[in-house]
Image 1 (cartoon, rainbow, N blue to C red):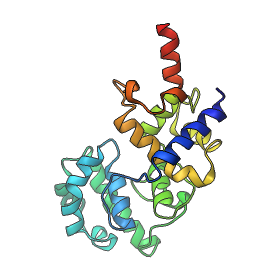
Image 2 (image 1 turned 30 degrees about the horizontal axis):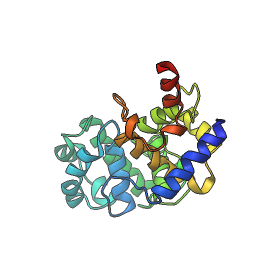
Image 3 (image 1 turned 60 degrees about the vertical axis):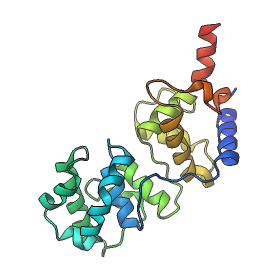
Image 4 (image 1 turned 120 degrees about the horizontal axis):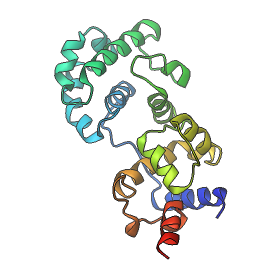
Length: 216
């Protein structure tokens, strides 16, 4: 199976069987999504969703967050990974939004990356989810699962993975493709013990193909 065929079959499967795939972070507006994605770095969505209701209640907009002290924000997110840094990032992000972007979250990835706490992955999530741009966010799940499936080869960085993936994913599918791979990695192609026996796309998977060869 060629790489192109592998992409086509995997995309066809998810398009038919999972036509709706979205982030599992809870949010009501772009500001809340940006905060949640910043908090989700090296932390589970479940944990983020536990702390954001109270955080959003106290800091309902970038204006309120910008006026806060990071020590105040820390109290709401201390159960999240790296709370000190993230508290500073959130206040810094909100301040920059208010001072340089008139409180409006930018749509361009390059502009988003200027915000404290916003790397390329977070910027791509916002550009894709909020502005429906063809931006493909690569987190640990996407990086690992893409390699497992055989969609990327010898990729050593998230950016390299992103570049390899967008070559084969149709522009209109780039946004949802990110969610397909994340959810597949979260519930089926788990890191320690992949559930290959129940994987619906095992026949398109390079890892499964190689495993069968070893066992024969």
